[in-house]
Amino acid sequence: MRVDKYLWCIRYFKTRSIATQACKKGAVKINNVSVKPSRDVYPGDNVTVRKNQITYSLRVLDLPASRLGAKLVDIYRKDTTPAEAFEHLELVNYSKTYYRKKGVGRPTKKDRRDIDDYIDGEE
Image 1: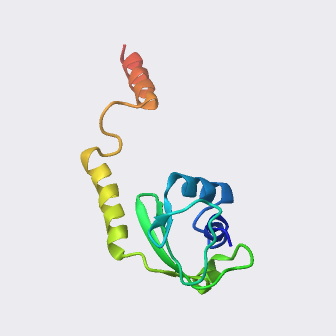
Image 2: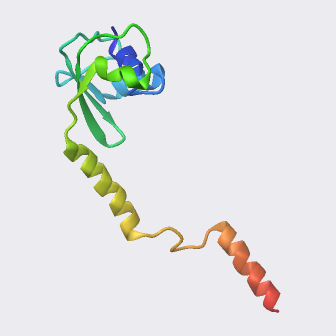
């Protein structure tokens, strides 16, 4: 089975075209080698997928016939992603909110209109 189709079938990507683009960009590796979308995947292969700043690692257990329901995905793959990858994502999200709280800084367009209405009401 093609690697882009496999990643789509086990729900790592929403569409096959997105999976194909990820392969072309080099975000998908099989046994630590970047692959084209047409590369076949076999049971026992280690697949690495870089998506949303997380490097997912998985082992192919079997090949599905078609796209699966979310509950059946674990039959066809074993997730070997380390917990540190998810902790790193939490740190990145926390650092974004640490420097600037929502609502602080330049006023939004709505805030500006509210301020103008308030000033016009006083005069």
